[in-house]
Amino acid sequence: MDAMSARPPFVIARSHGADHLAPDGAGRNFYAIDHALRDLLPLYLAADDFRRLEPHFDRLGGLAGGRLDELARLADKHPPVLHPRDRFGRDEDWIDYHSAYREMETIAFGDFQFHAMSHRAGALGMERPLPAVAKYALQYLFVQAEFGLMCPISVTDTSIHLIRKFASKELQDYLLPKMLSGDVATMWKGTQFMTERAGGSDVGAIETVARFEDGEWRLYGDKWFCSHADAEVALMLARPERAAEGTKGLALFALPRWLKDGRRNAYRIVRVKDKLGTKSMASGEILLDGAVAYLVGDINAGLKQMMEQVNLSRLSHGVRAAAMMRRCLNEAMACARGRKAFGHTIIDYPLLRRQLLKIALPVEQSLSMFLFAAHAMDRANAGEADAAGILRILTPLLKFRACRDNIPVATGAMEVRGGNGYIEEWVNARLVRDAHIGVLWEGTSNINALDIITRAVGKSGAHRALGAALVKLLDEAEAIPAAFRDRLHDTLARTLDFAERIAAAPALEANARRAASALYHVASAVLMTWEASCPNVDARRALLARLILEYRLSAQDPLEVAAVDWEGETVELIFTERRIAIADVARLLGA
Ligand SMILES: Cc1cc2nc3c(=O)[nH]c(=O)nc-3n(C[C@H](O)[C@H](O)[C@H](O)COP(=O)(O)OP(=O)(O)OC[C@H]3O[C@@H](n4cnc5c(N)ncnc54)[C@H](O)[C@@H]3O)c2cc1C
Image (cartoon, rainbow, N blue to C red; front, top):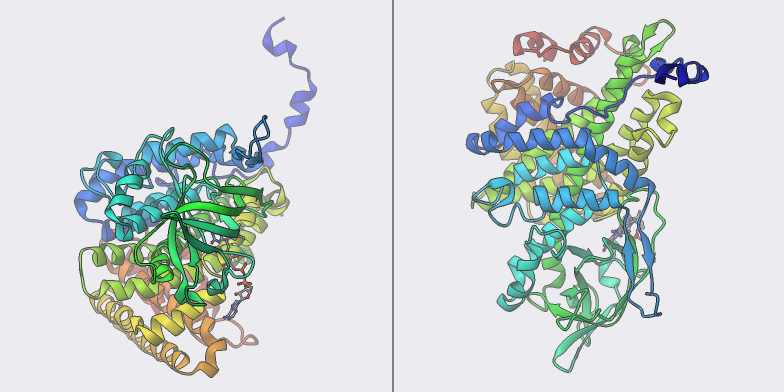
């Protein structure tokens, strides 16, 4: 019997109709299809770095749409399992991961060496550390497939930063060779434990105590949220005995999982949390029972030092939100162009296009914002005076707004796919679940908004450095009609003034989120305008800037019929599949 005649006829009947469903993003190269990223990277990366790194962006884009995507789907469905004891009843707890997660670790830590690429030469064949722009662009591509593992990757990277910057030479010599290794089987990965039941936002309330016993520090306490729970090195805050109350009395410690003699350190992973999202990665609860730890840096500056790690994580969270939103947009576009209803492809319907616009706008804003922030980090590392201030305010701005936007974007993309978007075998359901953690870890929206307004604006005056940089970019964007740039100049000045007024009056604290959102929107509108004015960049970014100006920074009358003329044409241009030149958009920028 040949293969064809062996196949039962009902198989053909069952597959009938599959082509009614729109395709998804699987199988595509997420770098090749990301025209915006490809346009913008040359603006923010040195030409030589771009030329040398582009093959790696392309390779990771292919992996993200292919093998990584498949592994991420499997790892999400087979979350890690905690084994609290070994078979002899010894408290040798360990966490079991699915082989798909292990393979993703090999790609991340072994092949791309994300954790080490900012700290040493050798990653991706470079003879120097990679610029921040390249690192975050790579994170952005990776996370379009896998979000959960980016936590261990990023927190290893940021732990290395803290140890390099603050630890004694002896501690560096002990930890860094293992943490910077690219050998996945033997390397030591990092993590960060702060939150306790007594305090997450209110970190000064934590109760873990550090006692100096027999010449070494030992920690006693209970850490309530510990992502990457089985990392080999955890950075954590604890209060040395008799130290001051509140944040002042906190010191920073490095806690190794294994002691120098090979024994397990005296702490236990008590539980692994059953989470809404980030299921591939283990978040646990940790009981510290006299665990040996090494003091890092100044005993009186624990929180100040730890905030460096928090800020690096916040930037990465913004990038991760940008990445997940890009995946949502790609999925929504694939569906909108591939699904028919009432005799038409659904992208032809005005209401659906508006829905797509609401997805596309925050996606593009977050891309511009994270590239600009990463570029500021590179400039700050090179000692440029204004860049540190710009980075200071952009970091919480990006974390606050991009992570919030991720939630409606994920829900919107799910809705574009209709009922299938709710079904776990399509990526949308995971994107919806994963989107929510961004408003929690490394500070909730309120905590980030307060950091922006009270500290970055009120105490540091960092908004002035940002404002000056944005004014300069607007002045450079000569190809954009002057009337539009004038409008942006004016809105920028008003936004900076608004933020200052909120920062100056504690009674107005309830406006902090509004002021932070306005700063984000105006900054992204200016960036997109400048980008659109640069050679080889699709000028549609300027149209998106106008939409931000109209819908995020201007008063709307909900009972007024929308000015459909410019908006209709704008939307038309935004969803055409050809590149757009400035001449095509100039008229639509209005005044
Ligand atoms: C899956 C997961 C993994 C995590 N991993 C880690 C980890 O690895 N390491 C770690 O240290 N932590 C981790 N966390 C903890 C996380 O950072 C905290 O949950 C978060 O910072 C909020 O703290 P909390 O849960 O104590 O909430 P609370 O601080 O109790 O906040 C409750 C609410 O009060 C609001 N609030 C608090 N203070 C103010 C204020 N002054 N003004 C206005 N509103 C305020 C908050 O915005 C929030 O809405 C993780 C959390 C989750 C869910």
